[in-house]
Image (cartoon, rainbow, N blue to C red; front, side):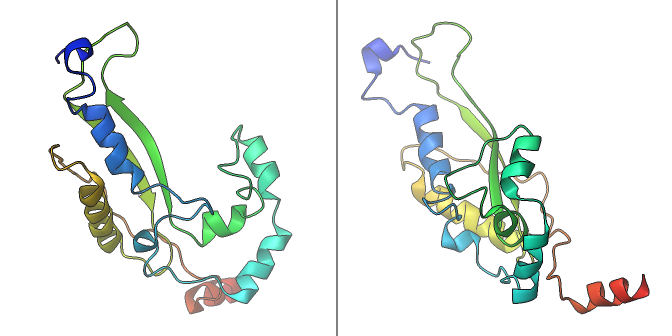
Length: 171
């Protein structure tokens, strides 16, 4: 890449473009993903929400795993967020050189994200929304290529789904 001393502030850096594009997918201040990424999600039933009170507190589960809460309400809302809300995890980003001093403006960047749909959601439909949001947020001067390694609807279902009731009765 070219040197930031000559072009910084005027040239589009791949890292900045990627951060802007990915930023469109991140949770808002209440910890929820943008509405288009929650479309189709089935709300947890009252019985399911009540059953969460019998589970270990989110604060304990996060601490045991060596993790920090994503925000002030995350530990308290742990079971809702992990059982009834889709989740997005930014698992990696790469651009530029961080292990040594470099003044070059990166011209390529990549990121890896994992999106976990929940009951009622189609992974393909959510993937289309991800692409729409990322493309809309990406600076028009940047080029963007999206690929999916795996699209999977998962096995999430409501706790009072007939299949689970039958399975519980059989046990």
